[in-house]
Image (cartoon, rainbow, N blue to C red; front, top):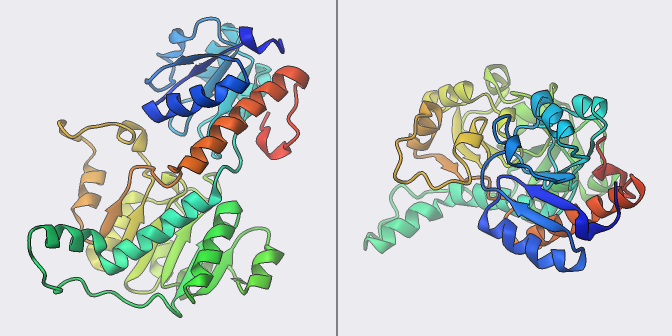
Length: 339
């Protein structure tokens, strides 16, 4: 791989106007050739890549063995994820075809953590409904009753950078914070967080917030069985990955009144919906339509990361990762290098 970045082209997929703006802005210090595609990377769109050593992908791009094989045939040497999650990439296939894979392990944990709390506050105090009411000159408070967050129990599943940031916010509201992870955080324990088993999180929490990666162990961690352990009227927040929630079980939980509030910034089938304007279309996904029909469900379209600080970090870290791989086939921050 050549270090002469003026000759290194990066093909970006699933790009939005803000991606172009931030990557073009910070490329002035790197000098790569940038090629932007709005379309998703998948087996049919690999053909769009022309003379690019690097492809840059996002959360809903398809980077399976089929795609990786085609990338290798096109002499692609690096797959750079401009996100933290990598469940959409076949890492074993990348190893076999000698393609490096890197990611942005932490860009702005606060951005996602703050959005999770914003969803909690919105669902609880119904500010979105109040806003619409007042605009229609309806000043009634009926139906807007909330509860104090103070002294409520919040359970956090996953205590990486985002989970830690969220715990500090929850503690600031005077909440009792429980957490579950494979490795307990001494920093969080010192702050006053209690690490408990997963079943205890389900049984004791008034609010459950998901901050774990999607893998074989966490897929559908919210399901019919785990819901059966939870308190009546529980609030569930997911700003991590859609596959953590079994949608059909959550719909049943909402219908039965087991789930009192649901806030999701991610959705298992979001690649067909999110980051697009479908306001003039008939959405064929019955599950998302059903979810959006509940008055106690709040859906945002993978917006939690979307702050100026986060997009700046994503651009800078992505470029730095690529530059490092081109120069020495390695990255100093080992968490950023997947293959």
